[in-house]
Image (cartoon, rainbow over all chains, first blue to last red; front, side, top):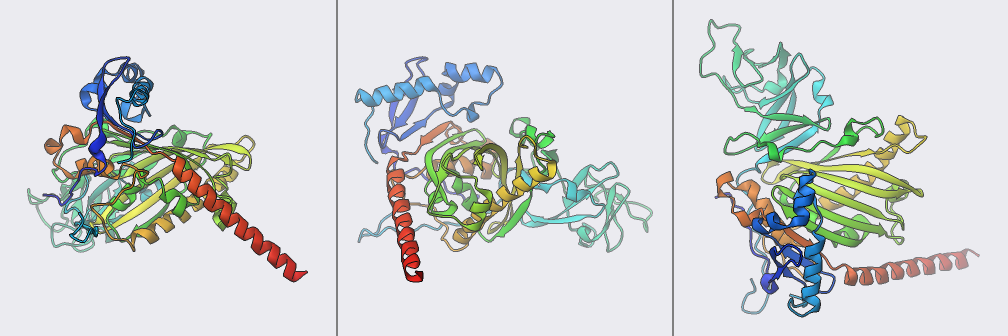
Length: 89
Length: 387
């Protein structure tokens, strides 16, 4: 017991799975508004992402890549098509 | 979290009982090489930093295992640190190398030696409550500008803060405080956490309604603004790559924001700046530009410290839709307080969070306009009465 307590974000409830149109990786995404985006990846999705793989192959760390553009586009499309709700928590 | 009358209560929790696993920067390496032992209070104890004959820096527990003498008040003899109490000599690996008045060094005479690293002209120690060695993949990255004649020398400053160090780490996700505490006007704010790295992408422009002296002197956030790409590498060392406008000229700077814990409720906050030399600037002039920027940063940190030392610790922040990912950041940060084999996969999995700044920008533009109008009215009034 170290005394640290990490709690879940009370705003988490509206996360939905979104599949990337480019590589098929699946993440959990939430949009509190049109501009806001939150994306939870797991290790398998990061490994599956071709954009991360291409950049990692030339020496970049995925942690320092701001985003995958294909996944971003897929999330935006899901929001526009109503598959991902856009609503404040 | 709310009681029966609907009132939200604060869960202050308690600071962790152990110190984060990871590399911690103790400062610029150069000043430790002055031939004397140096004292550093950290990780709930006292450390001694000393240089051997080759200039290599070593860190040991400060208290001599013989009778508890303070090695930081001793002297460096050969490659060992000698205790001022009975002249016991301790080598870089923590072994007692000599007891001049005794025929024999006891075979158990060994103190704690800390693993060190020099990178970017700074000295780091590895803290691991489990006693493990630092894995290569969490090392401190090299900053090319720190090794280049094209860049200034480091500035270096520090503050003692009477709060748990989680307060400074929380800043990684705190978009709105940049407006209220740091005279900046965020227009873009995004975080990415993955593995041992927590990144912050930030764009700000200036607040024309707010011109503290240091801001006027440094001028890093004009209308052209400032672009910041910052990342914590482990629990305590942030490298912030900045581009900003300096009197109409684009400037590149690297800001280090780092800390080490003294106790669970005190830490040493440190910051250092290098700037890329503008064409035609002498090394001395470049150092002055870096010093001005560091002064501006220091002013911001002093404002942070004033908040931290008066606020409540809070384990259950009440967030609105336009706040950053405080809970996700804290979950990322918790990895450094757990045993290595107890870190769940989802704690270090990639998380991205982009804050919607549109509502904030709208509100802040109105606030800035109102402040400017009020100032204009004051000026006209003053002008009229003096006429």
